[in-house]
Length: 278
Ligand SMILES: [Fe+2]
Ligand SMILES: [Fe+2]
Image (tube, rainbow, N blue to C red; front, side, top):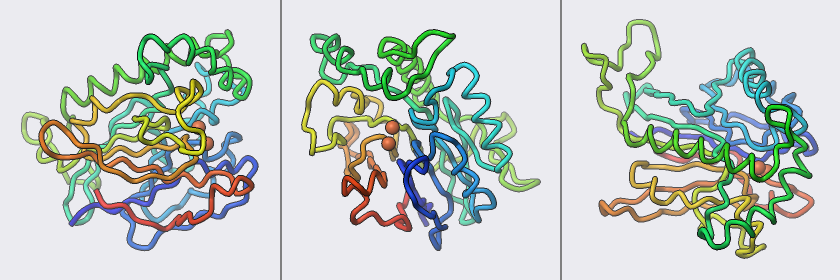
């Protein structure tokens, strides 16, 4: 039996009113970023009946210093019993024995989605980050160039993880072991990537089409998909669920379960209790 995921992103609880509820039958809850820029809304997920995985969004870093914000965010979530993935792997075996490896990172934007010729234009259009986020990195403005640097580091980490295969799973209960005598994994059934930023232009919001600012939302990570069974993202306030064909004849399921902003009609038709099987 497949693992059933409840997925939520872009709740934007810093301004929006929404009461998250556990989806009946879910094995895990995945929060794919932009849940609450103030972090306070994360308290609503404390005591959740199933494990909660959190990949922060860009807005979790608003008006913060990146160097110190990530460790502080990890602490904040750890106190609430939530599992933060930022360049982290987490292997989980559900009660039916299905073992899924999750690889999580914000990913940011490398502005390469339209190719090298249009990269400068895409970076120029990305004033979004600087203006909206007002964050710093090492005390300097977290501008588009700094975003790109961070994005490339995230991508390198993700590629290395996907290339290398899984580490030994963490035991789910005392005495359970997912590792063989040599410490290698035994039977990871699926690999699921979680990023806040979108991995493909196919996830782009059709309301805006493909313009230079689209590079602030979507990367071109299709090449990495051949190592992933599923790819969950947020950031784009347009829900999608599609399959990207892989060279091996299989396909990678790409899912965005963003709620978005009701005042823009983005939450219309949003089903927060929907389950996705991986
Ligand atoms: Fe968002
Ligand atoms: Fe976002």
